Amino acid sequence: MIENIKNFAVIGAGRMGSQIAQLLSRVGKYSVTIVDVSDDIVNGALKSIEADLKRYFVDKGKMTEDEMKEVFSRIRGGTSIAEAAGKADFVIEAVFENLEIKKNVFAELDRSAPPHAILASNTSGLSITEMASVTRRPEKVAGMHFFNPVAVMKLVEVVRGAFTSDETVATICELARKLGKEPVVCRDVSYGFLANRAYGGMMREAIEMVWERVGSPEEIDKALKLGYNLPMGPLELGDMTGSWGLWASSEQDRIRELGPEKGRLHPLVRWMVRAGYTGGPGKKGIYTFWKDVLSKGP
Ligand SMILES: NC(=O)c1ccc[n+]([C@@H]2O[C@H](COP(=O)([O-])OP(=O)(O)OC[C@H]3O[C@@H](n4cnc5c(N)ncnc54)[C@H](O)[C@@H]3O)[C@@H](O)[C@H]2O)c1
Image (cartoon, rainbow, N blue to C red; front, side, top):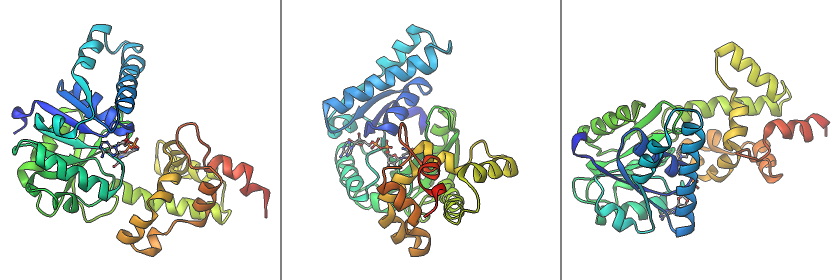
C-alpha cells in the first residue's frame, strides 16, 4: 500500500541513484537515504544532487531557495546498506550492472529491510528472478527501471520476476505515477526489457549502415528523425549516453540472453571503443569517429 511507504533507501549513489534520490525527495516528498561504498562517493553524490537542484530548478525559477533546502534536507547519505535498509519501506537498488554484485546487495537487503519492504532494482536488463532468488521475499522483488535523465524521461518500466506479486506490481505502478512518471509493466525474460531491447535493434541496424558506408551518422539520424518523427537519432543518442562503451562491457550478458547473432559486439563498436570513442559526457563517439577515421578510407 503506497500510503504506508514513508522512507526510502537508494543503494548506489552513481549517475542513476543520485537522480532517483532527488526525484523521490523533490516530487514524492519522501525521506531518502542514499548509500554507496565510500564517504567520498556519497558526498560527491550529495553535492551533485544539490548542484542539479540549483541549476535545473532554482536558476530556472521552478523552485525557491527555501524549497530547494527542504528537498535537500530529506536526503541523507550513508555507507551502510544494513542501516539504510533497516528503516526503509521501499528500497531501490542502482549499483553497477553486474548480476553477482546485485545478488550480494539483494541478499543483504533481505537480511536488513523490514519484512514489508519492497526491494526494487533499477537494472537495465538483468534478471529480477535471479535477484529475487537470494531473498526470502521474491513476491516483493521487482524491477523499477528509470530512464536517464530521470527528471525528464516519463517512462518507468515495472519489471515482473517469476514470483513478483500483483500487489507489488500495482504498488510500484502507483509510486511511479506519484513521481510523475508513466509505468509500463513487462516480464524479466526480455534482456533490455521493452524500450532498450527494441531501441537496441534500431541502433544495431544504424551501426551496420555506417559500417557499410550507406550514409554518414548524421544522414542516418536525420532520416530517422524526419521519417519517424524521433526527437533524436539513435547514433547521436548513443554518443550522448555512452551506449558504445556500455555495449562493449555487456557483450557477454547479451550473448547469453539474446544469442550470438544479436548479442555479439559489432566490429565497428569494438574498434571505436578500443580507440577511446565510447560516447558519454565529454567523450567522443561515432560522429567524431566517422570524421577522424571512417570517412578517410582504408
Ligand atoms: N546510466 C544510465 O543511463 C542508466 C539508465 C537506466 C538504468 N541504469 C542502471 O542503473 C544502475 C546504475 O547505473 P549508473 O549509470 O548509475 O552506474 P554508476 O556506475 O554511475 O553508479 C553505480 C554506483 O554503485 C556503486 N556501488 C557498486 N557496488 C556497490 C555496493 N555493493 N554497495 C553500494 N554501492 C555500490 C558504485 O560505487 C557506483 O557509485 C545499473 O544497473 C544500470 O544498468 C543506468
